[in-house]
Length: 99
Image (tube, rainbow, N blue to C red; front, side):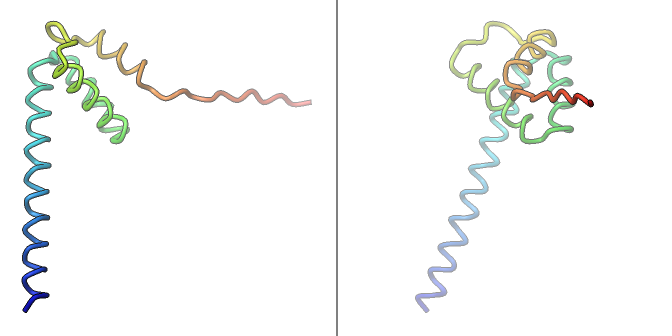
């Protein structure tokens, strides 16, 4: 009986955690809609389609900037391009020389 109770309580925690995650995602999307222009949102979605992890990182960064009050007005496409360049990890270049 105790095992069944623990399983039921564990399932409730997972559901509550999933609901909290959905609420956080909905709140993040609302913030992005408020602070991004259409062009910036399209650019961010294109990045998220090609690199999902990087796109999520950028979304979190934009939401954090907006919630901290460091975004004045809306972020346009040029500002989004600059932000993507700043957050993009360093790419290593290789020079191959043949003898």
